[in-house]
Length: 50
Image (cartoon, rainbow, N blue to C red):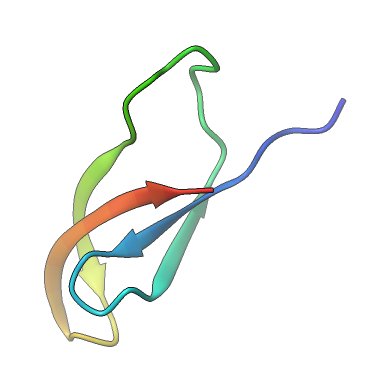
């Protein structure tokens, strides 16, 4: 069985810094987390992309 992968992209620079496997398959909204972006060198909001 193949697991789906999702990337977390920085909202300021657009770089995809983190990868994850979504836990809920029926989730309609995308995950938004504040994480550290090494390109911006600060904590920024990261949104889930496909």
